[in-house]
Length: 117
Image (tube, rainbow, N blue to C red):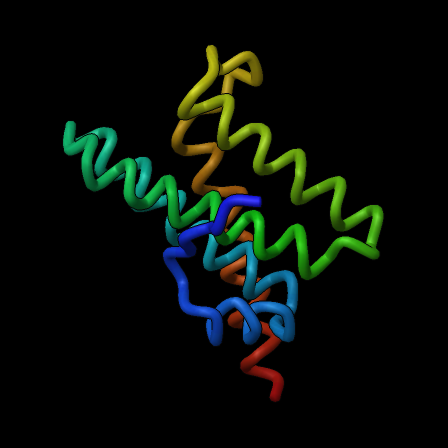
């Protein structure tokens, strides 16, 4: 089996497992936002790096939520749509505004839940 070269540290990956789903998806959204921004600005090298980070965070999130079928289905669907937008033929007819709004909802949910504590 080939060794995977992770972008994020082993400590970050371990910490990711303990975070709520709103935190996980909100942070994926940050990388999605960067991917969209750099693509729109025509800087494909930076867009590719953000895409790679987003995909890694998707994978960490899938791993962290593997036992929750409903949650896992949502994460996998979001990853599929992200990949279709950047690598496929955009068969879901996603646009950058819709995608950004989806992830912003998680960031807002996390902020509101952490403000309660």
